[in-house]
Amino acid sequence: MMSKVFSACPQGVEAVPITVEIDVRPNRLSVNIVGLPDAATRESKDRLLPAITNSGFALDESSIVINLSPADLRKEGSAYDLPMAIGILASKGIIPQANLAETLFLGELALDGGLKPVRAVLACSECAQNQGLKRIVLPHENTREANLVQGIEVLGAANLAQVVNFLRGHAELSPPDTDGRPQEPIEPPPDFAEVKGQTLAKRALEIAAAGQHNALLYGPPGSGKSMLSKRLAGILPPLSDLEFIEVLRIYSSAGKSQVALAHWSRRPFRAPHHTASPIALIGGGTFPKPGEVTLAHKGVLFLDEFPEFPRTVLEVLRQPLEDRHVTISRATNQVTFPADFLLMAAMNPCPCGWHGDPRKSCDCSPERIQTYRGRISGPLLDRIDLHVEVGTVSLRSIRKLPPAEPSQVIRKRVLAARSVQLERFGSSLKTNGNMNEKELTQFCPLSDGDAEMLECHIDRLGYSGRVHSKILKVARTIADLEGLEHIEAKHLREALAFRKLDQKPKVRSLQAEEVS
Figure 1 (cartoon, one colour):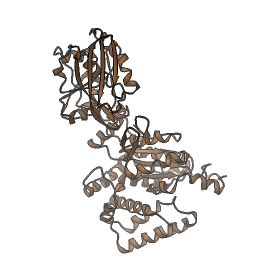
Figure 2 (cartoon, rainbow, N blue to C red; figure 1 turned 30 degrees about the horizontal axis):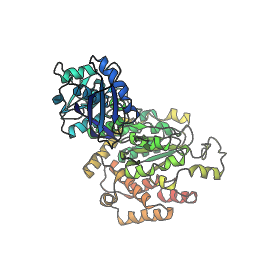
Figure 3 (cartoon, helix red, strand yellow; figure 1 turned 120 degrees about the horizontal axis):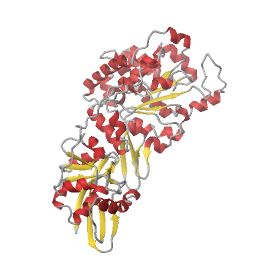
Figure 4 (cartoon, helix red, strand yellow; figure 1 turned 135 degrees about the vertical axis):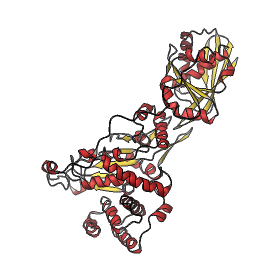
C-alpha cells in the first residue's frame, strides 16, 4: 500500500515543497530511503521503527521504501522523520490518508517517539502557505517561529503518538501559546554614555548609523576602537517587522532561531575572530550554510584587528559589500544569501600599534608599516566610506570631561535622518549608503562651485570613481542629519576628511590644508 505526505526542504534561506512517498509491501522487515538523502536523512531509517513501536504502534514484517520527491534535489537533516513515520502508519491503514492532504509535517524523532525541534521552520511554514496548505504540524518548540506566518494553522506536538491520535480524530493538538511576536529584550545594549571623549569617532559612527555607511577605526591599542564599535548597534533604528522576518529566516536556516527571537528588535551584531576562514565569513559548505556576512544582515559586521585577517578572507568581502548578497555555487545547486550589513572594522596604525602616538615610540620600519597596511587592498578600502583616526585620551582628561552623550540622544538624530531617507526613497529598506548612480544624480546635486571643488580634490588625491560616489553619499547623510535639503560645501569637506587612509603619505598635509 502507498501513501503521500507533504513536507519541505530548506534551500538557502528559503524552502521548497517535497512529497514523502511511502510504499509498504509484505516481506522481510526493511527500510530503504531514496531521493538523494544526506547521511542524517539516511539514518532516519534507524530511528523510525523504534520510534513507531515505542509509541505503541505495532509493525508486521514489511518492506518499506521511502522516496523523497523530487528525487534530484539533495535532502539534508532529520526534519523528515515525522512525515516518514506518518506515511508508514498511513500505508499500514493506522491513519486515514484523507487526513494528510492539507497538512505539512516537520520534526525529528527520538527513539521513544518524542519530537525534537528542527531548523528552517519559518521558511518551511512560508512554503506551506505558498502551496495552499491549511496547517503545519511540528514540535512544540518550533511553533512560536512558525506562527509568525499569517494564514496557516500551526499545531505543536510533543511526540508521535499525539500526532497520530490527532489525525485519527481521537485528540486535539495545541496551538502556540503566543501570537509569534517575541517580547522586547530586557538587557539594554552598550551605551555611548560610557565612552568619554572621542568626539570625532562618535560623530563618524553617528553618520555611519544614519546612512548605513561602512566605517574603519584606526588608532593605538586602548584608544577605545572596540568599545566604540560595540555601541554602534545601539544607535541603529530598531528592526521593522519585515526586516525581522528576513533576519529570522536567516538565523532559522542556520539553526540559530532562538538567538533572533530573543533579540527581535535589536539589529544583529556579529564579531568573528580574525582566524575565521573564508567559508566561515562568506558561507558555503557541501550544503551551503550562511556565513557571518549573512548572519549580520540588516545589522553590523565587526571585524576587529582588521589587517590580521588573511588577505584571502578580506577579499571575499568585496562582492557582498557591493551587491548586498552572496551567491554560492556548487555542482548540484546554487544558493543566494542576503548580506546587507554595515561593516565596522578596527585596526592599529602599525604592527606594534604605536605609530603616531605621543605616549610611546614606534619601532616599526616604514617598510613594515607599509606591508601591514597593504594587507587591506585598495579596492576593499574604496568600499569603506569612513576612515576615522581614534587617538588616545588620558585618564586625567577623562576625569575632567563632562558626562558623555547617551546612545538614546544620538539615536534620535539617527532616526530623524532615517525618516528623511524614508520619505526620499519611499522604503525603510533603502538608505543613502546603498544609493545607485541614478539616485546619486537625483538626490545629490551640487552647485557648480562645490562640484568643481570636489573634482579638484578627487583629481589631486587620486581617488577612484567609487570613492567619489562614497563622498557624495556621506555628504548627503551629513546634510540629512542637519535637516538640510541640499548638500553644501561644509558637508563635502567633512566627508573628504574621512578619507585619509587611501591617500598617499605625501599628499596628507595637502589634503588637511585644503579641507580645513
